[in-house]
Length: 103
Image (tube, rainbow, N blue to C red; front, side, top):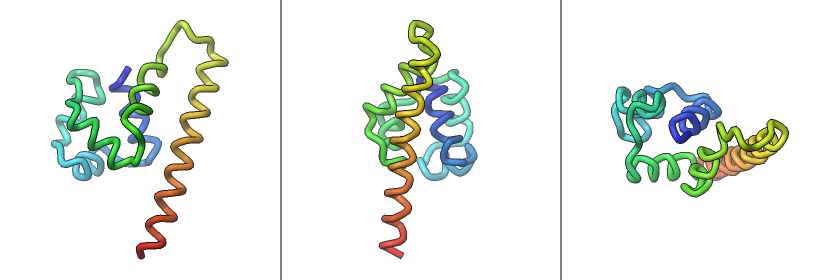
């Protein structure tokens, strides 16, 4: 479920909806509707997520496809989640190092 994946991505980075909507250049209400599943994000908005979080769009889509997959066992789901979180942590560390170099 894409809406849940985008919500988890925002929360993982400890951002409020207001902070992220400002960073992405979209309204807070639109972001809220995306995260609640009332609206589907456009490819442009998904591209903004990808750019902002420095995560390939394909990884966001992959994550969203497996967030609530009932066919996958709980152990496999936790393994996927762990791998994805490891990737996000690596990306966050890389981003922080990049910020220090430019500061």
